[in-house]
Image (cartoon, rainbow, N blue to C red):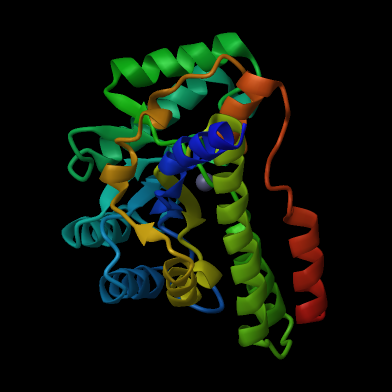
Length: 297
Ligand SMILES: [Zn+2]
C-alpha cells in the first residue's frame, strides 16, 4: 500500500508543476479617466510589459469603443509593433444573450474589418463577459461562424474581477477622496493571486493537471498601475510568464464543452462537464466591500 501511494504521488504530481501563465488584456482601447488618457494608459502598459520582460500578451479589442478610428488604430498598432497579439472582442462589446446570433456575428465581423491589418494569421476571438450563450443552438451558431471565419476561441483559464478595482479608484477620485494606493494595491494583489491559485488548484484537483494558463485582465487603470507588483509576486511564487501563443498551444483551449457554463473560464466549464459542479472564484462581493471600506465609498 505504501509503495502504491508513493508511486501514485510520484506520477500524479509530475505534470502539475508547470505553473506557466500568459496575460491577456480585454476592452482595449480604454477610455480617458481620472488617472490616464487612453493614449497614456496604452503607452504606460507597453512600457511596463517591456521593462518587466513579459513576452507577447493578447490585446482583445473593441475598436468601435475607441474615441475615433485613427487614435484607436494608432494605439493598437503600437501594441502590435511591440510584439503583442491583437485579437477580436467584438466591435462594441454586446452580450450574446442580449442581442442574439445575427447582431452578435455582425458585430464580430465589424471588428474583423476594422482590425484587418492588425490581426495575426491565426485569429482569436473572446466573448464579452465570457458569455457564450445560454442556448445551445445559438452557442453552436456562433461556434460555426467563428470556425468558418478563421477564428479560435480566445478562452481564459483564470477569471477574476480586476476591472472593479479601477472602477472604484476612479469613483473615489471623482468624489475627491484621499486614495491609499498602497492599500488598494494589497487588495488588488490578494484578489488576483487568489484567482490564479484557485483555478490552478481546481485544474489540478479536478482535471488532473495544471494547464498553460491564460489570465484575464483588462486594459484599465488599476491593472496597469499594479502590473509590476502582480508580475513580481507571480514570479516570486514560482510562476513563469509565457507568451500568449505558447499558452494557446495547450489543447485545453481547443475543447468545446457541451455545457453552456462558460462565464468563469474553461477550467470551471470542464469541471462542470466532468463532475456537474458549478465552481468558480466567486470573490466579487467581498472584493467590492473591501474596496468600499478602503476608499470610504
Ligand atoms: Zn470585455
